Image (cartoon, rainbow, N blue to C red; front, side, top):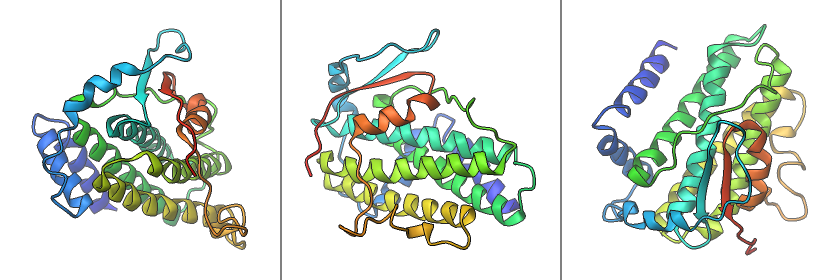
Length: 250
């Protein structure tokens, strides 16, 4: 546990100072497992973020965040992933910081591990996007009772299911194969998160990979396009996140 805490503090500190971008990019490349993307300058595509078309108004006092055309550039789709990772990292940070009543050591270890994974994912995207990254979002977890095991694990299951379906749906819009590889690695981790959370919720069932997770007719998991995902996560973020509509390709 101590090591995990130290690692967590290390990542946060490492990525919060002036060296964060460089360090983050090294983590990013390690995650990619290749140097092919080293020459990719995401910041060169920032002008494409200005193409966003607002489709809603943010709640009073909060801004609208535009992701742009997710179907035409990787900056938008990486910011989309960055937004989701921000939400997940904030949720697990809160869950560990304010443990629900009766949380076992095993549950705390699992939630802490997931928190650390989500923070690394968030920081990877933040560092890779650099100046092209969207602002930090403001989570709204007022509908979640963090003192209740059922509420916390239920929310965790929901977020993981949304996350996996989001990566499954986003893959078709990613143009750079290195980013597609990165997304594939991350979704494999997110799927493990979903499985262990479902196991905690239903220890005697098959929900870790039940028919509601892997569809019998296709052998595949759920796929959601960004518009569907942003609608589902809207209640959990104060800002309104807009993106130009993209159609499901497959």
